Length: 422
Image (cartoon, rainbow, N blue to C red):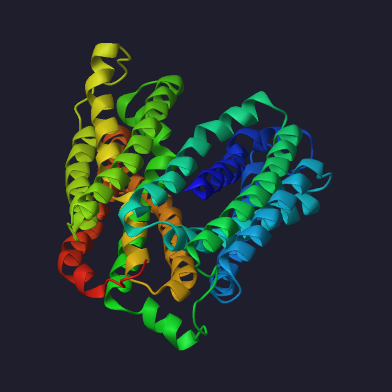
């Protein structure tokens, strides 16, 4: 399992670079690399450095998944990782907005391209009984990358930060590819498809009932997470009346609880599987989402004394936020594990590419839905901003009822759809 360590470190490095953007976009503008006046540079940067690169990367995601299945997952990880590293190095060296846009596009394409190959390789090289922990290592690394990225952007100049992270991504890509190649050889498993890749076979996998259910699940799963991660600070300021520093402290603790949820969800489900419970992953996920929704709604609708920043007032709802995110996150590593177990190995990267597109769309739609609903409640229905914030977040959280229903459906669907391998 040594290769998982290198893969987790690689994920940590490029997610740190991804999240660093939030802390450095203003310094980039101040240096003149990003054009526009003070009130418009964020929209310009968002379009050319985030939105357009993301669209290009998503468009290439499925082809990269097909390449991973046909040519090999290790080769795809190597190519995508080096592409990310080169993109980051170019960001650090950029002297014009055009070069900066190209650099961020290369990074985005590499980041999207590495995902299906990486997720497929975890399934290929980790036994079913330990796969929850394998995917938990990936998801925990993505979470740790958030505060680490903000810290890197605040402590280092943006040029130095991106240059160092680019070099680190290149080094870790080489190390991860080498370790993963050894794992494939040791297990005597090919790094690509074991039989001739057929598009009809890939399409059949994507349209199977279990996979379709999980694709629906991940889209609705991503919307609340997208809204919460993007607007949680604003929510705490608007609904509770606390300062940004207090809100940031609560969210930092929440990120720790999410890491705990990732690891606990994977470990608990693995234990149930090793104990012979075929439905262990589904049961852990079902329980986690059910409890998580209830606790998160309690947190969102908590009658907080507006503007009070005393510890006595903060502690109860903050504890609800931590528990709600932790319980909900128990499901995360098991979504990928279950998906890997209902798809033949030669089509896993292709399916994970489609899966990632819907996940990304969910994360993208969630913030827009929250903002639009909040604006409607205030402008059209006369809600106060605190109440509009609470109702909007509560509505978005209720979208997790769809994943809850899918997990209930999987109690019957999953056992019939499992592909027995390794």
